Image 1 (spheres, rainbow, N blue to C red):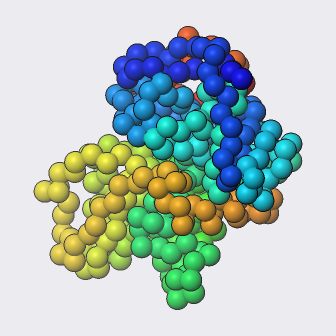
Image 2 (image 1 turned 90 degrees about the vertical axis):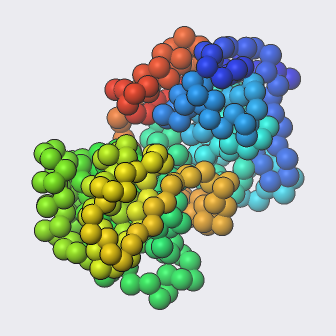
Image 3 (image 1 turned 180 degrees about the vertical axis):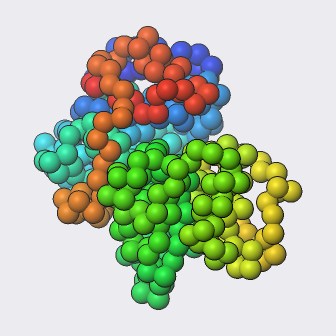
Length: 346
């Protein structure tokens, strides 16, 4: 049995449409879905144009790790899903993966998949996986903040903790704000984005990102003083990441993590006598299985109780596995282009 799929046959070449790609079948703990929405992010463009992750997946590769669809078959050991369920998942980057979204049928790992409540559209659900998991890993793995369901949570004082999030207008920044609220962090300071939206998600302070870095830093310091320990940057290149680093406390050890792991000029990080650690987010469910398994199991409840709200709108939509249109979308991600998230309807 074969299907249509968009394939990357070689790095630095366009995706091509084929109609004879094998339909993958589920192993014991996997499910097969008919894909309805494949979500594209900036990393998909980097896979195509730079070859990142291809050493893991091999070629030909199918892109799109944000996947929504309807269950067709389940593996022999699957207990959480049945045929007909509507689900969302972060597909894997593993060697030989058959899971990604730019194909008619895909295979998903049961433990990193969630049923989609009837109140949430396929498009809104497709905004969840990559951006949400990146912020999940940033907060509860890279920063020493325990996940709220972990045993360590019993002795951690969330209410007295402060988190700085840079990039509140991004999907990742907005999901980070929601996760911080879900955990019960008492002071959530967000730079950038809509004040009304972010306060609705749980931000206690929303600061304008415009103006000089020194001016924004002064605004942050007016709130946190010299006591900030935790900071996350969801958007900036290294020069912009200095804002969060310089906001960290000088007399307490600080922790900073970021989505763009490029070299920082540490000479421009000032007055950090107590030191700091810099983390690089690897927001892949299968790479952080203990954390992500427990999170994905809770996602349906969080969505139903509106403890977690998917993004509504803000994404570009195209229909069909049309190679030219999908390649154009990937082109638009280059150099921080106008498109931040795009959905292909199958």
